[in-house]
Length: 326
Image (cartoon, rainbow, N blue to C red):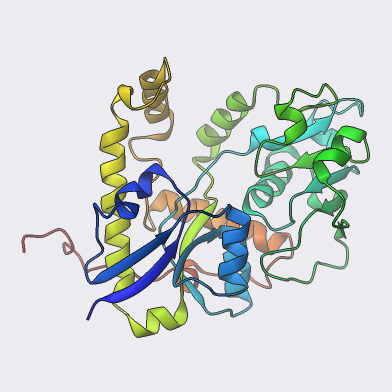
């Protein structure tokens, strides 16, 4: 009997072959849902447990595991993004460098959203901006409830308040966000990026640390893992097969209407290597994940530094197995 599983995930090129049924996980009928924004998907999975398998916030997943919630993750990382370009400032507040953020009022979408979580850690470890020196203002509630440290200054805004509007009006000094914010998109002169050349900062960061930040993981409900203990490996293999098809397709510069697309593709390979979107607990992914786990503990989101074997399912098929002749 085949397993009927529902997967909620972003509509990314890497998953196109899964979504369209070009790649079919062995023994699994996969119902793929892509018509949700990230915050909604994470909430519905981590709070309501509506899906068998789902892409979810890496930082929220770490907190969920720390609290013993019934989820386990595959070492599949659908979404990565550098974050230096998502620090926005009010241009009238005299903020010209990262340390100018110390003691300021900073808005966030939510405190534990992974992009913001990475930024807090990067600002503290790389630029000397302690996260406890900031007055934080969060717009929406968290994917997973947590008790902030007593010395963390965190205010939850009213439903009618928006960190984006508050930044433009000067009620906040800065905003860390997971997306480009509306005032910036509309070229509001009251709002700018902290790092004007954010790409240069991001390239310097990855050259120094080797980290291409992981935003999301693919997690399964524990009851699904218990019912179909073989499904994790088969899903993992299917994700890799789909990603391989996507990489081959995206090598073609005709695939997208960008004049210098191939040059961008080659630049990425030069800086990040041949497979910056690699899955699995590879040495580089281990370093990246352990960095985020460390930030989670340092920022009071978890009670301890969780080891990766408590976070991720073992998808090993044995040494020299998994790709051998059938």
